[in-house]
Length: 312
Image (cartoon, rainbow, N blue to C red; front, side):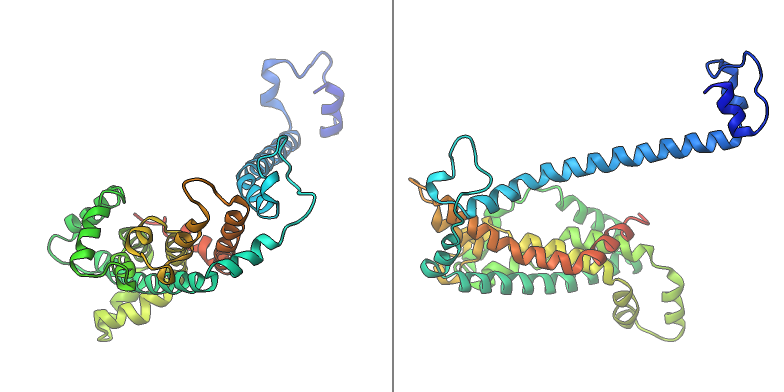
């Protein structure tokens, strides 16, 4: 900055020979100049941040856009080079033929019913366990909770064979109970809801105890109504996980009429060929309910995630 600019900002005469490159000048800049520089730097940081976010969002959206584009192509143009993002002719028959050749409605109903039952029971069991770990005092509470946390580190594939052996001994193979019962509890949900319960003021619970409320009444009438954001956030997590689960339904269910959507769409993929266009159309159909659920719960979902990190 030149001395003339300093004169304009301060309204006073400049000092002859004073230049902005002088090391000691930064400490004598008027407050108005420093505020202007700070606002300019903040504005540029925002522009840089938003530009980075937009670029990352575009990169993350590429697979989704390619899936939608492929679902509207014919099989001959899926792997054409150079790749075409916009097909010359939109093939909506890829969607209609799914309902004509496959029991899509039955698979959608199965997927929704299994996901809804599992999410509902998980919300109940995880919230009760989280309340016990957050509020109740009992022997070995902390070691038991850390044991739950340790189970989060066990890969899903490690427990797959023991769970399958247990289900087969109960004669639950190819049944809905075999598909649902092993999923009714989630250590991640217990951890998430416990963190939220810890953030609630203890005075509410102590006042209820003075009024003679039991633990069950405190849990049902005080903690659960205040925990709607956290419950909704965990519900969205659980619903997305159950809706897209492929491995467990694949090894438990054999009958086509009992399959979920992710397993049923595997009929479009064989050892010799893959019907890519209809497979992508099925994936788009499978994605739509998840987008609707997230759109309806977005505000509470973000609120629940932010509030569960307030207290450890």
